[in-house]
Structure formats: structure tokens, C-alpha cells
Image (cartoon, rainbow, N blue to C red):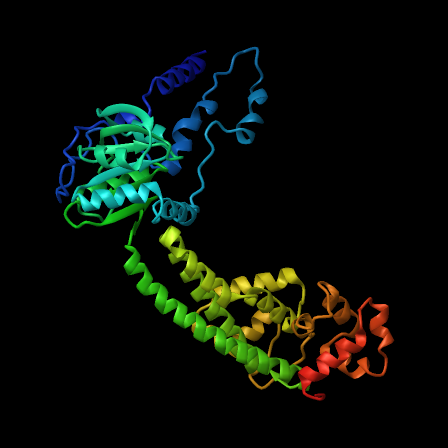
Length: 438
């Protein structure tokens, strides 16, 4: 009974403990200027970060008091299956930041409000989403609960303190709100607004926006990671450089693929030819991804740029996968996807290495001059009479492109049996690509 009473006392103390917000209510500070002084450290214990909240709030389920009439094994299977507070994922920072950038892109109401704040030479601290934890990390201010508009956000920014907005950007909940995150939360920022924004993004899952009055810059913070918003002219400078690079790379890739097709029909493809083509694919895709990131930042101003990007990228992804399947030891589409993912994470210097590329394709002891035999999936897919999925059937039947070329004239009925429409047209197309016929 003594042990049971002791466990019951522990449970009572745990349930009467205040939430972590009680540790956050230190003396408020003035947010009127971008000061460089650090806010006074909280006298209460430092709050736990967002990822540790499971340990604090989910522990109630582990403190259930046993009674003499209740067997202890009755409460064991429920705890791991349905935890009260599941731990939040820690690897979604990049995606959350991507969403935040889209919310503040040109053409959005939020961006219009931020531009007005900058034009008015004012500062602001704005918290979007996770409002429960944000409100728990501060006090005072004005309770509003009004619909969100750009003009209202601009007018409320004239007051000190933070503005709290719901996740869907439909309601402004608080204004002039004094946030008090713990000084123990790590940040490299120096200005008071930016430092508070970084710490609030670590403490909660909110997107926090800091507008510097003195430097006239806008920064987004997600999970402690910052991103500075750039103006449209600044972004377009990078866009022009990337478009030129993408156009040049696409032209080189087209020439390389045309040459590779000729070499495949001549049955004289070397590993060096494949390495060069794969490298160009990777360069094109990497530039396209960089351009796509900037298009998100451009918002409504990036529609024309997106059209140009799609024109340059074309069907490169499909051709890249077919190229990998043509030369990989395992020609399955799943394996080709895996190889592409590994190659995309490989350093440029290693992508130029024939030995490394051969290893990724599943071969050992291959040199740059080693002859590689293609299946012919990419070449066959470029022939108009070959329907989708038919190239795989042809390769399964003949084994390789060269065996198909050797057999196609002597035994065209073999293609008829596979369901190929107009096998003679397929043969003429391949031979014209080979240069054997006019």
C-alpha cells in the first residue's frame, strides 16, 4: 500500500503541473525596433522543443494507477498503438518551408501586405499556424478574431508585438502580442525580431515572418531555418542565367542522344558514351530543379518562366529512365528509379567516373572503352508505330536492339505475332535512323 500511495502522489503531481507555456511567461519586451540586445532569460525552466512534446504531454497515459481489482496487463497494449500525442516528424522542414515560400510569393495577399510594410518603413513579427502553442508562448496583446486582409495586416503592423494568424490565412487572432520564447533555444540571429522569430519556429510548428525595419528585409523561419525573401528583379536575374544554362545543356543533350542512337544501331556503344550522356541528363535536371524553386518564389510572376522550363525539360525524365534501363544489369523500372536517385545524390566528379557509373549500373571491372549492349527501349520508344508498352514486349522477344535488327527483315511475321502494327514501317524507321536507307 505504501508503494501504491507513492505512485498515486506522483500521478497527482504530474497532472497538476502547468503546461510548458508557464515556463515561457517571462517579462515582456519591447518589439518597436530591431535591437541587438538579447531579451532577458526566463527565470523558469527552459521549455522543451516541439519534437520533445510527446515526452511531456503523452506521459499521462503511462501514469495510470493500478487497483487491486485491475490486472496490470490490461493497460499495456493500448499505449504504443494509440499514443495521446504522437511525435511530430522532424524531416519535413524543407516541405514546410516550400509551402511558406508559396504563401509569401508575389500575387498573394500576404506578399501584398509585406510589400506595404516595407514601403511604410515599418517592422513586423507574424506567426502563422500552430496557434495553440504560439499563444501559449506569450501574453497580453489584443484579441481580434477577424478575417484576414492585406490592409488589416498592414495597419496592425503599426503596433508593437507579434500578429498571430491561423494556418489557413483566414483569421487574424491576436495583435500586439508579446512573445517570450526561452533564451536557451539556439539561434545565430542578432536582431531582436529575427532572434524571436527563429526561436518561435523552433518552439512551435508555426511559420514565423520577421520584417526588419532597419534593414528592410523579410525573412521566413521554419523549424529554426531561415529564408530571406527576394524581390522580383533579384529573382529574374537568377532566372535568366538558369534559362541560358538550361537551353545550352538541352542542346548538348540532344546532340549526345542522337549520336548515341547512331552508335547503338552500329553496335559500338562504349561506357564513356553512356557516362557523358548521363552527366548531361543530371545537369539538365539539376538546373530545372533550381529554376523550379525560383518559380515558386516568383508566384504569379513566374508563369512564363514555367512554360520555358517545361519546353526545355520536355520528355527528358522519361528518356533518362529508358537510358538507364537499356544499360543496367537489372532493367526493371523500379531499379532504374533507384539508380537515378543515387546518381542525383552523387557528386559531379564521381558522375564523370566510368567505374562509378558502371558500379551503379550493376557491372564490375568495366572501363571507359568497354562495349555496352543496349536493350533498345529508348530507340524503339522514339518510333511512332511502337505503342506504349510495346517496346518492352519487343525487347523481351528479341533480347536486344541488334538481334532485332538482324532478324527484322528475314522474319517480319515475328513482330506481327507480338501485335506490332505495320512491322515493315518499324523496320524502315529503324533503318532510316541507322542511315541504311534514304
